[in-house]
Image 1 (cartoon, rainbow, N blue to C red):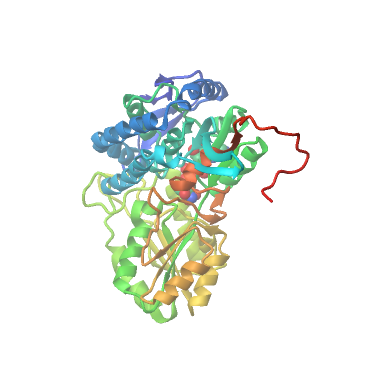
Image 2: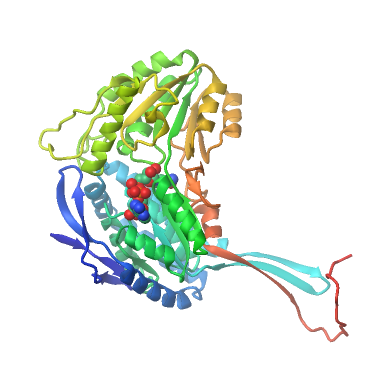
Length: 497
Ligand code: NAD
């Protein structure tokens, strides 16, 4: 059985913990590897090494750091097929979707290659007579990232290329469900010439996470995962005086206005609700049908959901792969049972799908609910599976109120041909990422990614300009050189008045 170890100081490291967690191929249900679950000793070792590597890396000119990132980008491109296959084999998503997620991560590396430009700072000559002042951003030290299972390449790459480009060293704790992609990325970064100890991986579960939180030598923590854990990370990192950004769960709405291009809305919803089996934090799990559009919307969706091609991720014909684990599959099916009991109308039932040759895989078909009400559990909670709920709203105001009163605020979109409606919606929605006729409004690498409300605890979004701010501290220097003129003691606040 393959053992997935940690990656510390440029090499694989087995550590001294005896705990393991199984890694499965979700399409077959086969256990393909065991991942080492580290302990605080493993984490502390990685921190000591990272702390030491920081001394040199933080002093390496940004242009030289950028050159390593350029090489890393080339190596990711060269090894693209292998990385995608790793994602498919441990996560289950279909090949082309895995490729898209890898490219979205790669784009952050490309953005990070421009780090010399982003760290230029600001300068003012003569803030006072012969006094100059400038602001610059310096790296924080050792940073850590804790990531979820659903994007084994992209989400870690939201974090570590930015942190490292800014001059920090980084420890990643990937999801124990699909850790191999991170290890491959670390090997490639190493091959690109990244000095040893700048990027380390400690695999594990809560034990390693708690060791990260309590380690005084870690300056900042980036987290992406479910809301209860995000809140735990946020509160406890703050208690331990760390900078923290903790991104949580979601329940993204798609408002379908009666004047929209219905084909565009239906196709958009299909991809956004069922792509990656709904295991995306930007998945659309609620369609809000406004006015009289509901019946036609549900009819068109029904036909498409019934013919959704479910299959293993390596099959070119598959549109949707399996769920991540047997337990998660049972949980998602359980939500469908609850929806039926709550009185929602189950228009398409994918619970009993069986695939010949893949009987042990964690597959289910797409499910579609109509007439879902806002007090139902299936509306309130994140299901994280291929289940779309249609809620009927009489008018735009009612739809907007649904969006704004939900506890989550990650993404939202509206389908309409009315520019004024689109503009008012984007202005009033209490949501971090808004799409107008765009089903999954995930910002590009040079913008920043993040939600509002209980979808993000902390102040800064990920990657883009916010990423640079998160991974650096601002310093402002004010300076005057001796000019030979007489200077007396000053006991008042200096001003230019
Ligand atoms: P999760 O919260 O279970 O796990 C995330 C990370 O936290 C993993 O590395 C895991 O090992 C660790 N963890 C789990 N339980 C812990 C505990 N009790 N104490 C400390 N650490 C713990 O999330 P998941 O199931 O891997 O991922 C799915 C969730 O992530 C969904 O809720 C999804 O919406 C969310 N997500 C959010 C975003 C975003 O940008 N907002 C992006 C991707 C995923």
